[in-house]
Image (cartoon, rainbow, N blue to C red; front, side, top):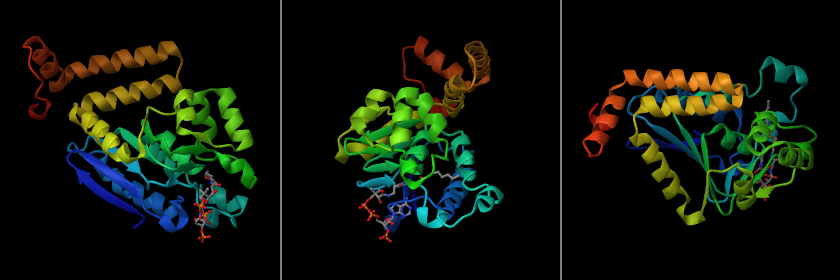
Length: 254
Ligand code: CO8
């Protein structure tokens, strides 16, 4: 197994665990991750996933040893790494807790998550150009949407790495924290998210992502319809009633 899985209440912590390859992402790890998370994604007892690596590396990219001898035909026939699309489509909120290198596919994996919380030690790069290729796990699309064309072009065409502080200023990260507090912070954020009603968190993240995929009026209509839909949920009744009664909502009881 290339992953270590730990359940902490309503949060599932996934540690990438291929130290011999700096957590490089290979087909086996991708399959294990998808098999593990597929069932948990529809578990009403799960409210958030946290993905992390070690203190020195999140993931050093796709596995170059696995890829380097493949032909174009192999890549197309295997639809190589298309499985990561299924990871991005998981509906449960995903927090990436990144320390050390998040390079290539590692950076792309972090960008598939809904929040990236990074240690001050984290560095981000899409260095595929230095290998004679280009990002292939969504990097050209997600990075450009997240930090804009100018910075994305700089990172993708030069392969240079950026620090956690630069990544935060550019809009890639949600939060930066001291390295020794990274996991604690990420788990606290995940527990907070997981404490809210699943119906609302799943709907909210789908609506936010719609902003990247549609025009403004379509996105606003989508948001409004999803918002209307939440009025069918017990969580909406409890949340609003609790406010009026000046008490904490009891979401675990609805
Ligand atoms: N793949 C395979 N093995 C790796 C990788 C990798 N990406 N990165 C590190 N390793 C291995 C090394 O080969 C080495 O193995 P060995 O001991 O057998 O020689 C071991 O991990 C340790 O590596 P280093 O000695 O280099 O460790 P350092 O701590 O000195 O350096 C770095 C760490 C800076 C992360 C360095 O290893 C590095 O630059 N790695 C490559 C980074 C990179 O170029 N990543 C991009 C990969 S391509 C990619 O991600 C494309 C994604 C899209 C695919 C989509 C397909 C459709």
